[in-house]
Image (cartoon, rainbow, N blue to C red):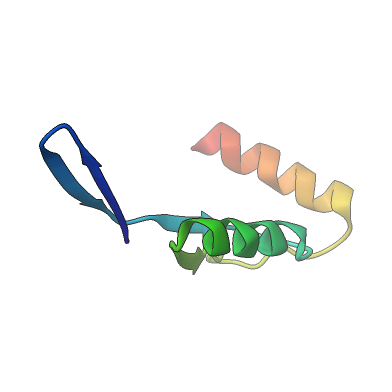
Length: 68
C-alpha cells in the first residue's frame, strides 16, 4: 500500500503487479517491480497451458487474439 499526501488530500493506493511468464523472464521483472512498489504479486495462468516451441505458441496466441 502506498500513501500519498498532497495539498490537503490523503489517499492510499494499492498496487497489483499482474504478470504472465512463459519462460520466467517476465516473472523476474515483475518481482523487481513488486519490490520497488510494495505491490502485491499475481501470476496470470492460462486456462490451458501453452506448450511446444516458440512458433507453435505464437500461432496459438494469434488465434486467441483474433477470437478475443
